[in-house]
Length: 480
Image (tube, rainbow, N blue to C red):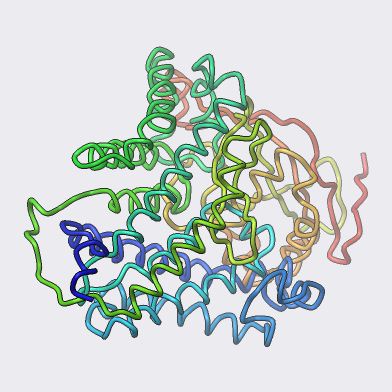
């Protein structure tokens, strides 16, 4: 098939493929490490939403997962650490040191393992970047390794994925909140985003003129630039570079798990590096590999009908999968922007009897705002799943269904896996007798307030979110 090789293979993308694969494996490593650290407390046998109960009521066809055969803490933990080890091996170059078929098996195992977690993860794995990692990871199976040239078809499919990520996000904004169209959304977004980063306070205090420029630039980057990915070089490379710069700006301004990093990784599928990497020589494309890549490409083309239709629909949906394998999904975020930030603050006390003088102590989360003097931390690309759900819960009690009261119950008994999800435990010796939840309005301090108080946040009490709960699980009664 020597005649087929020049048509099938992409010359000049060898270095881009190397960066893309190693970076994608790094994202996989972070994702599996997140599962190793958090899955037991969130979805384990005694977790907030036990995965074992989920697989008993949901058939394999609806949610394919290895955990349908066995779902306990030992198996899920072993799979998470196996994913960490395999991803680390790929980062170190193992997939380039083995035959092509073995490399494809390694990437396929990463995909199957992570699919198994996502499909039983329920709301804790219901984020768009989970599907994005699975879709990118599936395409990576057909990207080849150092023994063969990068397939043109796979690189184009990755560009199509990147286009849907960016263009879908741009459309959902333009069709959504009015503030995106009048360029005012960033008056609020840096303050009200799910998990601000260490620079978010400074971004929020940029001038309103700069905020409007930011918003306008975002529309250009997401609604116009992605079309350049399908043009010949150097236009495609320039478009990829602009997308990378835009995503790095987002990395600096907040914590969005691995969404921005994975978008940056995908952009390398459009970067021609022949000027710096030369032109390595490869043998003929193995016939079986060409057939497999073509079949995979045909599958993606067929499955693209539903997300493509979604893009042009007036009722566009964001972050939706049209199949249980999470292949060819729709993406998008922040179609509406919250104007006011509210936070749920969990408190406990060791008083046996509640009075007006009862002393309450706060639980601190790792990422979400709590202590007004604590500077927001940088956690992305690591994903703090409970912190994100607490942001959703503050928007509406509907988001607490099924997991919030179990969380409070775990705090009442000092459940160690649950406490490891938090930054601090104010009751290290004995569990609290009561736990409650209060709702506060948070806003960034002004520059003057920051100088005077040293605080990054100012908060105002709104209402009681959950009345005090006893260790028995019953609601407590206050005495005046």
